[in-house]
Length: 181
Image 1: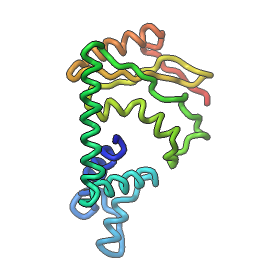
Image 2 (image 1 turned 45 degrees about the horizontal axis):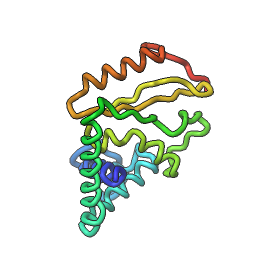
Image 3 (image 1 turned 180 degrees about the vertical axis):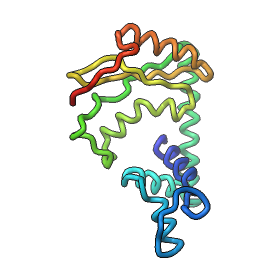
Image 4 (image 1 turned 30 degrees about the vertical axis):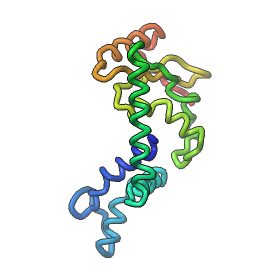
């Protein structure tokens, strides 16, 4: 649901950056080549894949089956969050399923289950529209880990107070650490 909606919105938001009327212009032999070059330069293949997915979900023949259905599921998620947040100040989740990858392990080209699951720990704030923040909470084998907090709509101050309390309790408030990975 998140990937369909987020990619469709990203695609729609970037669609006018054609290098002719708006956006950075990359040269080409003709108008089509200028637009292709302008829309692809500076974006990794992973980002371009997301634009393709977003564009595909916005095709007229796919809108009802994909985009509109994703919007309906999003509404169910937002309502479920609202129901949970009636009784609690925040929803706390791990920020990712693993520690941060080391530089030689990082690969932005992956669209693997591990990557998508790790990403999904934090997208509920984006998907729901509720305020969300991720704060550090410690280290595992020298690598940072964090928790993600999501609060009620317009309850940012309470969210920030809880985030600050977590930083104070973990002793990480105001600290910077060099990670040797």
